[in-house]
Length: 217
Ligand SMILES: [Mg+2]
Image (cartoon, rainbow, N blue to C red; front, side):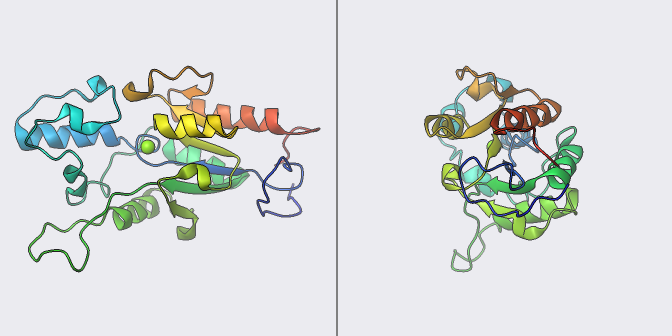
């Protein structure tokens, strides 16, 4: 059943519009951490197990002579990240049922004015191409690049970052936490261990949020 409008106006008006679902990319739809640490280990001859990285601050886990955040400029890093199991089905279902937006942060890449000879990287465009490859049904204008995700108007966010989850909770906004080693300190019933669980939780949160009747699709 089509709703009367699809415009998010804030507030609990889910009987009148499609819910807006916001989906993170890194370590939500793809295996970022596993790939990042594989690259690091290969480049520096180290043996960091990504499952032991139990803090959001990457710098604590690399050698002192390595810029952990500089490694985010590794050419093509965000273009070739492995897709998580059920990611295509999850996004297809979100797209079919709701207003779905990708909400992702992106590190800076190589700008036109950077020093000549710098290894070229453009994480934001690599992310857009990755999305177009794996989710061709998703319009390109459904991508919001933003670090402060709690500023985005939407009903449910799926994300792995502890600070984002905590900020959403503090503001009374809904967030499903994708299980990762660095967010184990968070105690929530909205912890999803995979995207099948995340999909079930999206449905459950919307059912809880529906004012009088169940959510109509
Ligand atoms: Mg993430």
